[in-house]
Image (tube, rainbow, N blue to C red; front, side, top):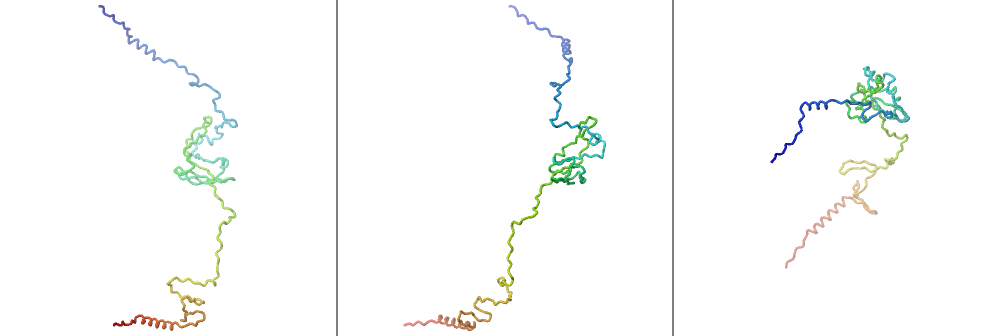
Length: 265
């Protein structure tokens, strides 16, 4: 029997050849950089164009009043933030005098009167958290144009010192010029004093009432001791009537108590 022939194996590469291949792969290939970014090109229509009837605002300041560098250098300049309604124009605030606002508490510092309405000017304190209607002012920052940078806007380095809010006064109902009385009670009747003859005396009160009129006979007795009688009869004395009543009562008692003796056979 013959033994199987051994399989031929490929020769292994030497270590020097492996290092040469790795060096070739590690070499950086030159990258071509285009003038535009990835998937972007130059398009002249990409710039912002304002809608018809409006134009772009030129942030380049004509004076140094609102310039970023001039505001930063001058220590006497403060930044105030004022919120006004649409009906109030900036020219209405020109020459307006208000009280010096406090940065710690909220208070009314002035008012602005116009033909159509009257507006109150309020100062919002930094520590006052109950002031309603202007919470968004606390998170705003001021942008100022910078002349050295061709009018580009930069955040002002100074903090906003005061926050003012211009709000319209609440409408109040005005009373009519000639108010009409809708409900009125009629006048109370008044009686003359000579017709008021009755007197009110509570039960058990010992008060002597003196009047010009004779008292009314309600119990059948008068002040002189004479009892009243029916029409056509003469009055009689009370003493005689009492004695007669006593005699009659005595006779009736005697008649009732006397008993006849029983006759026994």
